[in-house]
Structure formats: C-alpha cells, structure tokens
Length: 297
Image 1 (cartoon, one colour):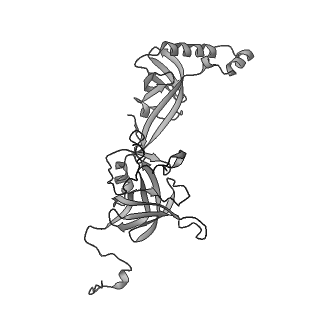
Image 2: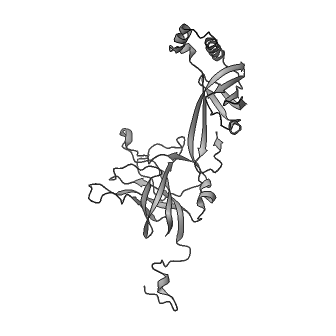
Image 3: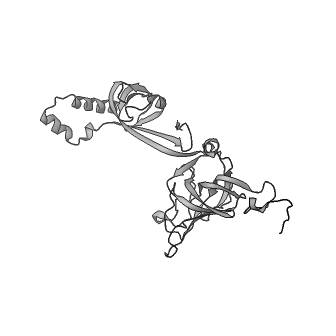
C-alpha cells in the first residue's frame, strides 16, 4: 500500500507500522508461554540473555523461567499444552533456575507447562499473542548446532517504563527458603533458646511470629531475640516431648563436663544420643516483592 501524506518530512521516520488503533502495544517487558526447541542442545537458564524475535524486530532480553507450584503440578499430560492458554496474575507461580524438561530422568512425556518473563533491553512494538522466538545468534554460525532455543506466545505485556516498580510486584513468583539452626537449651516445657539460625546483625523482629519445626517433630513459633549474638526464643505451643527433653538434658550435661582431654575426645566421637536438636525454618519469598516479606502458609 502506498500512502501519500502531505507536508510530511520523510527524514523524521525511518521505519513505522500502520495498524488499527489499539492493535499494537509498545512493551518494555512481557510474560510468554515457553517451549524449548528440541534441537537446541544448550540449557535455558534464568537470568541468561537471549536474542528475542518478536513482532518485526529482534532485541536482547533477559529471561526468568517459572512454572506451577509443586503442589499444583498436574500429572504430565500425554499431549502438549496450548501455548495460547490465557495467563493469570492472580495465581502463584514457582521460580525456576532453568527451563524444566519433561524428558529428563528417563521420562518420555512432554515438558510441563511453564512461562518466561522477558525483560527487553529496548522497548518493542507487537500485537498480543504474537509468536516469540528466543535464540543464541552469537553462536558460531559454522558450528553444527541449532541456534533457536525456545518459542512461545506473548500472553501479557508491560507498557509502563517503570514496570519493575509498578507491575512486577503483581507477578507472584516465589522461591522456597530454608534456614537451619540448633537448640541451645531448654528454659521450660514450652520454651527454648535457639542459635545458629541468624547472623548477629540480623533484625530478628522480621522473623517474630514465624513457625519453625524441630528435628524431633515439635512445631513452635519464634517469639523474639535473646541477647545480642543472634540467639532467639521459641515457644512450643503443645509442649516438648519427654524424649526431646531427655535428649536436650543429656546434651547439656555433656557440655557441662570439665575440659579434660578424655572429655574432649569423647565429645568428638559421633554419638547418636548426643546429636543436637535442629531447628528448621521454611518460608516463601516473592521474587519481585520490593519489601522482601517472608510468607508462610
């Protein structure tokens, strides 16, 4: 189509798009459905950069892979999921260090449903549901290998230049965090002092109210700090088990012995009855939450 525009300086426009109003969007970032191209032999890692072909241009983009939470994961389907299935920001997603292949560990099924967040180095203009291709075009062109890494469909775009602050926090992608410490001593049947879970400079107020689990099976709640060295108080609502109290009592008695060489040698021997009771703290942290809150279900 030839278009004649009067009083238009062609030097002001090198290349443009003609479209129905509202059919194209200029995006700084996007969520796409993603599927690895089978001939690509490299890994697809989160935070890696790929050449992203979208619309009528190719730009560099950083990739973050994510999928369904382990508890929501459905049995591997016998057929591939549609790449055009609508994306919802209202549900939770699980952060992945890399794209998950369904064929690993001897499985012959298709890859599980998963998505990728693309962050473009410069904005791109494209329609919704357009084809997206991720490539490693910097690979040696003479090498005997496929340079096309993944494909997908553009499901959700971010048009705000400040999308990191305004839009990404609505994307509920989380990691599971785990901390482990030890019981220092028992104060009574319902309370104990823990250590080695936090650093000395950690603000323990951020962890008050979080649930912990002892290696002996009891659950408790962090009540606050104890002293200035990173120790903390735990409340065991149901009370300590008699076996746990006996175990901790025998451990503390061994610590109270004189520092003779014989006692030190005995302390170094692995004894199952003197193993410390460990404290386990599990929580979620949303990747794009600016406040870095810790969430427990």
